[in-house]
Length: 217
Image 1 (cartoon, rainbow, N blue to C red):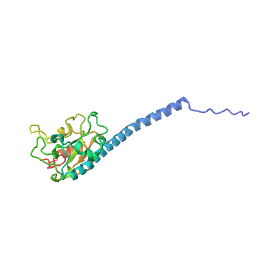
Image 2: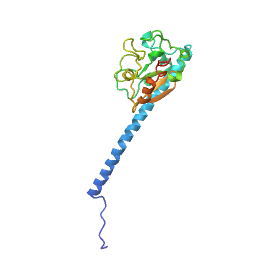
Image 3: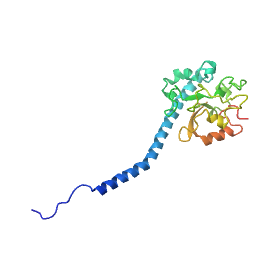
Image 4: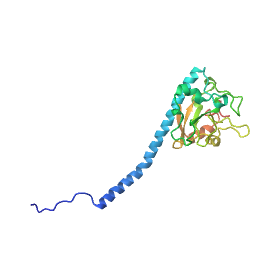
């Protein structure tokens, strides 16, 4: 029989506590990064929703002699108009929209509809009438508090001024929904994720066509 003492297997309590502490530190470091990665993935899903709507819009416009989909003001909401082209309602909702009861998360820029309230002399409802389609927003994400309808009031009110100044714009659009940014579909069909700071510059720059197709005066 050997006279050497047997070695004990396993960890001591102190070693286990050290391992648990290390795991806790690593988890604490990774959690914010994983949270940001998830939010980026959801932002991309929302962007893809708008991309699908953009493709449907281009198809609709081609079939309707260049006319863009309309809003409820003229009893022809873009939601129903695009249904045959987009297919289903799944692409109409942003996955992180905080307003859980509405059927769609996006609204149309009323300045690309015929004779918008507050600017009845304007008519940029045909793609050919928009000077630079790649610069003008068609759809944007609705703020959680915005429950008006399927369109924004960027034309504004004669008494209150235009609805595309930063404060009025941010009251309607979810400008920081995706890590300080939001997704936008433009009238030419392309989509962009834009930070609120970048959008603010576009809203205040004279001549900008971001919201007003004819350019901010």
